[in-house]
Image (cartoon, rainbow, N blue to C red; front, side):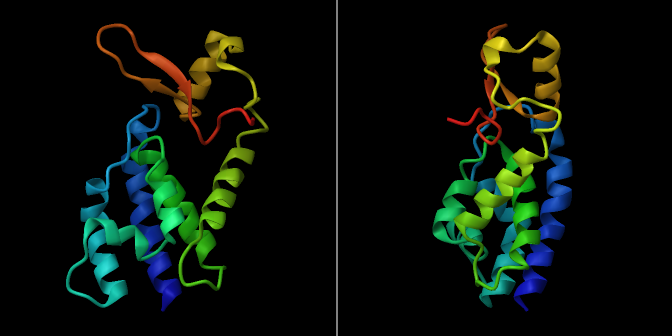
Length: 163
């Protein structure tokens, strides 16, 4: 039964990540209200209840620590991308809820998937315009939109240089 819900979670997250791909390059906080419509039906079914609060939705599938971390994703695209991947990984974990460890391992795998092409430890100040543009197009660096022509490029925390 649990595997069915995780597969359904994956099936919701996949098109959501594709639908938000145009937002992968912007730094924009994830808001719980953005999750209510796509996930509330699944959360209600999984919990066997007629209603869930916005705060309970992620807690249906993730531990509190993992849910809190997911809400710190740099934007809604990366949220859905991580949810999609963790739903796949979670099917192989016997625990009832997906843990922070599983989420962090998934983020590390996503990061490793970029390391063949990109030196993720390179500071922004050392990137050529081409390198910055390539990373921005993939969402590895993010644009902070400011008034006028004062936008800024920052590291996506998921792909930021290791400390």
